[in-house]
Picture 1 (cartoon, one colour):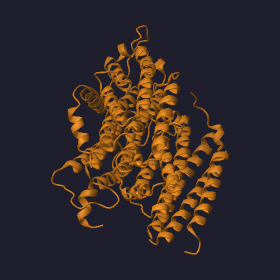
Picture 2 (picture 1 turned 180 degrees about the vertical axis):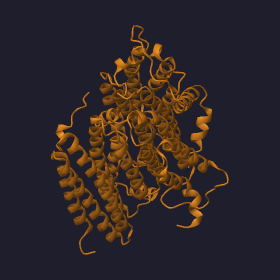
Picture 3 (picture 1 turned 60 degrees about the vertical axis):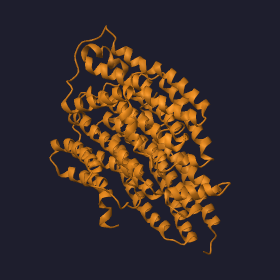
Length: 464
Length: 101
């Protein structure tokens, strides 16, 4: 460690220092400070004066890490803005909330930039430890505690599996360095059984975190019990960071025995997630099962050729992230001191009570379903195309079928929103921070769907 | 290295499976957490054994790091245990089934 490495580590340091500093601010400044801190990190990443010639140990500072950290910082800032209403309504501690969100973003940034199994483990743990508290943050709410428990136990199991997998890979290859460990494992023609078991355990831990079936059972309960902004961060940021780590720094698909496992996870997630989402009448649970299906689609990017896989996968993470943050943000923005409107019945006649919210919600759900002029369609188009190129026809057919069926569960809440015969009474007006986040998400959803070239240029920067 | 690496891995594997069985079969939250600790100790054993086999210290360093992370994890978990015991009066995981669907 020398001073030359400081520029490469500056964004991470800013996140860490920010998450400590926010604890000493007045409570009403805490959440805006969190949002500004996210923007400051983005500035530090892209400021041309700060160039990092000397790479830091354990984390990379290449294009991939830069774009990923930018994304997580943006999502973290959006979460801080969206959390304001629910913190005020339910008298939650705003300082601790902002500090934990910044710390979770810090973990995500390390995770997606990791070049070593050690930093992979540390990043995942830093992110998860913050989420254990965030999920159970609302102590008055009994489902919050239950959700905390249901996130804690699978999280513990996943971290034990991950660390055992890392230890086995180290025992088989003698290296914690990720590219080297992958190469050494792939070099021996029938892969040594210890290394194979190690990589399989690491994959299962990642599947827990990205909620791929059959490791998805915690997802709906945790989303339902957690505060909506936290559920949004969990769905877009933490899962995105795990997928990014699998795409960029840990190309498991280079190891031939892992490919059938990945394909099986993708197929199971699409099938189980789709069928479980059909009967749901709770928005957050429906979004949870839909995220299982979307993670199944994203595994297609892991199976594709690495260059196209990174581009298609990260483009999909951007489109899915914008839609998810907006969806959970809308649920949060309609909450009052009594709680969040979770059931479809609460959406009845939203188009009359609050036309802008209904319009955005419709847009978001249609994008998740993959209707043509919106971002979700373009994301699926690119992603399925990449999977077709690498010859996974059966998985693409399965994905197309599941997105066809998914229209049913995405359209059900939309129909309720435009239900004319409904009670009167408008929701609380949208505040400034929420308006900013919604406008940004809507812009991403519309622009990435109609004119995706700037986004493609952005993800093309990420190639090694 | 006097003990062959294979024996270390076998013993650690047995320890890991024992911990996993405790996590999956026990219904008391404290016993589940003890199971997780047993699993993490198995990981430490593999790391130290492999570090001696490859003759460089990074495995031992990771084992130390793992202890710190495990302590952080368990402190959060115990805080949640105290909170659940106070609010619900039980730490039997089967009793936490309020959400369905």
